[in-house]
Image (cartoon, rainbow over all chains, first blue to last red; front, side, top):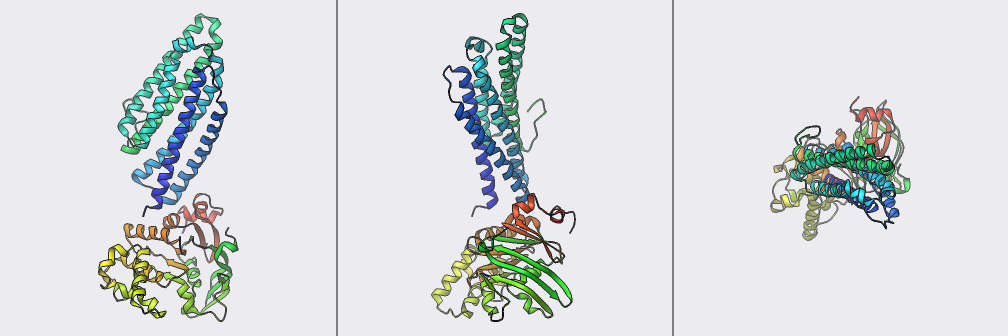
Length: 219
Length: 255
């Protein structure tokens, strides 16, 4: 006889996983929108965005209900607290993916510049981090989560370097200012996605170990 | 919140007096069918008195006067020609302290069916097995049905009492603090059982333990000083109650 409480926890886990997968689609679509010349999938992206927003509210309500009605403790409590936090983080990633998509048409013609500033590589990195974060959450894998924290820090660092390189080029060549501005915003978006995924991975460590590693230098 | 057409029990302007003392003041409510309804409130608020009006247990106390109506399946149980024994068969009750008879487990369960005229052994065996299974205690006692029910632990005794109630095939089960004398594991078993039983029965539970009300019930009614202050879906009561008194009570500010 499976307890009702366990069913509620299972429901929460399923909803977070679904949200992760939708956000992953958003990231892949925004990557395609920048790197592929014939991207026409904007409707699907908007539909996904609506589904993510609805899931966000559902997760919020479900957590409120579990807190109020089931008084969770220990691992269950950490799992619910962290799932709520993870839901918020990945919902934000979905929003940022839309920002990237909105800027795609302005940078798409400049593939050579995008490659020079490692944008395809960074897009691939954040998609991979998101997929691995989903894996860590699904399997309660704290070791993988700790690796993701390091990888996300590294990606964020690369974004900062690229940002500075673009600024340096802008200072020298006024004709690149328009494309460079869009590029800077995209790189800054990728940095923020990395930061959010770092938080997600830290929350997975909290679920498994009960240890808060955020705001610390060494996870 | 529950339409009267969906309700199993419909209470209209029910007041209960102990002598000159008014214990309940004009309570009206609809209790939904095949759901768990919890009554919460501080000691002396009238919740147990109200529960006992639902199978006329208050008749057994002298000096009690009742006004208003309690309709079960549309029939007022306080009208003159009601057979109270039949009523209590239809509306079973579980008490705070488990009260198995000093008889074997088997005899505890078959006591009610036998009084109701069932004597065939095969039929009685079937009732024992079904009732104990429904009360989630069959696996623990199936090999010792002839031992005394009093030899079981408190949690097991309580489930035997639930099985004994189920054996007479009730529609409604009233529970007055059914787990307050039990340890956390036995309490969890009773709560899980309540969750299973609501598929087949309308369950009404009085509890001092608000967390228990939150965990087990679909609907919660908050009583205070003989008044029904608020009744709503449990998730609404515990996340966004409409009345300040309810909020103050469930958040531990009084009571």
